[in-house]
Length: 472
Image 1 (tube, rainbow, N blue to C red):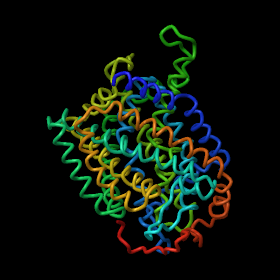
Image 2: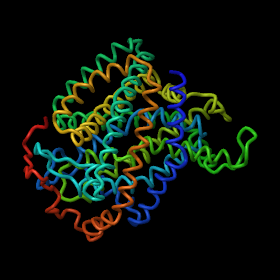
Image 3: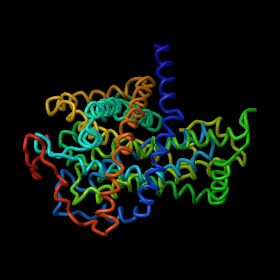
């Protein structure tokens, strides 16, 4: 088993190595210029996210779709993931993580356009969509669509459920001394109570929990920055200078520090916001929207909130706390959880409890968000019967994740996450003209509220969409 674990870990490092990062970052940069810096419309997307269109058809509201997408992305990656980037890549990794998020907005937008453009009404009368439908209907390549759905399902069962529940159980054990199996049982029950309500109920739960926890976490970060006021500017200066550092590391070649910062900053940024993975479009396709561009703008704000705002706040909070106690800290000798807990202990009395609650709720909503992703993938692969099996199996996985060691599961799931990127990015580049055409038609001509008569397509069986139907 140790040998197998080493092989899987090596494969994980290879998958998430320079080739994949170059592919993703290259896609981000290409789409940014190809779509004429679509990032400039991010505040329009924010305004649209709180305005529903009663004429539009879909399973969930536009904000509900965004909430589910944010539920899966705002989580341990924003806290522990940023800490990992700093430990492995130095403070400069925070800058590259942030910059990656800025460019990734374009990719998240393009994913949203294709998700709605190629969505369909399925045989059960529910709207389905996502990269597999864009690949099958836009690229005419069903086998690649099946591959994407399989990788999504693997990632869902690992990173989406088991590893998240383990993170919650470990945090609760350290803070409140509750046995991990007990936390796992409670998590499984809470997940069961929500997922049996269907997509609409999940969107309501995420719509309530995600903003509340995000606001609590952001307030906590601002309190930390306030108490670290004298070291905030030095922290920002260190982050920027280290991002472009040409010094050698451990006697190596000049420029290694900068390359290491780029590697870990970009990798953690991509892992945090999921832009290019094709996960968020699985839910964006179900949103009530007049046209594909309207929902795509809303979806793109997820990357803005997740990486550009929250990851940046986290990074500055962690680095400024370290500088507060040591003007020349050696981040490589610390761990990511240590960085996070040290920072939140700056909040008097309640700091570690705020961090623990935020981590627990973020991980919980991530489990819900990934259940929705797996739901779309399994229905594409096998319809309603296979979905019933998936839903029944998902709950025990949550419990098992809290009660077992998960390094192998984490690596396998991480590999599946990386492999999701390849067919999705190929689809984005193949259909980029479709994205640009839709953008020109509805956004650049000022017709963002104009309905698209083909926004919901009827499948081969001729089913019609029933907006009042409860999701099975």
